[in-house]
Image (spheres, rainbow over the protein chains, first blue to last red):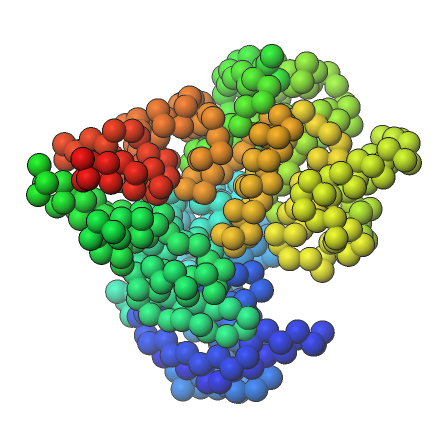
Amino acid sequence: MIKVEDLYFTYPNGVEALRGVSLEIKNGEFVAIMGQNGAGKTTLVKHINGLLRPTMGRVLVDDVDTTKVSVATLARKVGFVFQNADHQLFCETVEEEISFALRNFGYEQKTVNERVDWALNLLDLTEYRKVSPFMLSGGERKRVALASVLAWDPKIVILDEPTIGQDSQQKERLRQFITQLNRQAKTVIIVTHDIEFVAECQPRVVLMAGGEIVGKGEAKNILTDRELVKEASVVLPEIARVFLGLEDLGFPRDVIDVYEAGRILLGRFGGSS
Amino acid sequence: MQIVEAQSLTYTYPIGTKPAFEDVTIEIEKGEFVLLTGPSGCGKTTLCRCLNGLIPHFYLGKLEGKITVAGLEVAERPIHELAQHVGLVFQNPENQLFALSVEKDVAFGLENLGVQREEIRERVDWALKTTGIYDLKDRAPYELSGGQQQRVAIASVLAMQPEIIVLDEPTSFLDPVGARQIFEVINGLNKNLGITIVLVEHRLDLTTKYANRVIVMEKGRIVLDGNPRKVFSSEEAWLIGVGLPKATRLYQLLKERGVRLKHVPLSAEEVCAAVTEVLTA
């Protein structure tokens, strides 16, 4: 369980990035934090793994104040995958990259090997085991960064822009293993601009603007709220735009999923013919 | 006139064991807006690097076949000469910007070519105005937002007055509003100035409406090429796993169940129009 209580954070250069943020995230939840560049999304999640410490307010992870434990201790529980994989990768092969943290945590070689195999397979990277991460494409490097964090099996996984450079199949795979992590009661928090990915996964959405939370709730309610979406400088998902345009014909407004859209339209076409 | 002509092009990176792409033959007309897409690792980025000579001049490796861009044979001409005809904008503007002011960054390429001072000033001002960042010219690139930085990167390329601009996922670090503004800038360069655009993108919902042509690559080969409506409504596009625009996907779902909209829609507006037409007829 993550509790963020009236959190304020000001960067050393005086920029007030967070202004009174309160949020609770339960175990096993899937949450998407959205909002314009500079809204405070990344600053917020960096408080959850202790990379940043509150200027005011506090953050509790499983009832422990994040300022009371080291980042290294917290890291076992909270895995963080950076937006730009190049800020994270440094080893000579994909395999070494993924085993690095595992070794640091003191796992036996046998366990390290098993975990590495598991993570490589999960992210479809097995064929690149012996390849340098820097030989891979941007999307593939992103997956290596993800694999290296998932390998140590953290309870809370924070993914900063996980869909950058990923094609639709990779995104579908990402969606599936997030569901899988949730089933194991693991918490997944993504920071993302990818409105279509959110429309497909339908996580709980936290919308931020100017260092504050301006809306939170079910994806289909938040992302079809024209005023709210505008305030946070986010755009409506394509399917939401379809149904806003069809409002006068008596269609529901809160639709963001393409399959649900198909069913609703078929229902009407069936009735009219 | 063909601005890009590639004949049976195959390329293997120096440490690569198999080609990054193979037997690619394409022709791009001057003034086209081409959307290049396909699964990650399919060779899109590598192909872009061939268009401005980074391949073979910088990355070395083995390039077979023949490619000419703006009438210049890429393998035979130096990068600085190609740069006057082909601009490349990267995914992450951090990899491209380095000067202490926006103006200096945009002027850098021209200074290197030894262009006259007065002309540099004119072209830099023009590039900054065209991309909507003239008022940022004295700012340091590193203190700008991601969207502003990406515009600086585009302005730097634009100042060279290239005939073709290649952009490799230029908005992936931007929020949707910032991304849309960048796509509008790019579209303006194409429609108003006639600059040929090759845009690499996965986010087809945002970009399809600008393109007159879509090229889909898979495993190092071009597998689909043509008008966006035709390409996206094809069975293959779905099978390859191209992230179809949601509007087109919705069209497919209806079609599978026997409901056929009049046109293949590429945007929400087109779906609304088609559905309204049927239900109010």
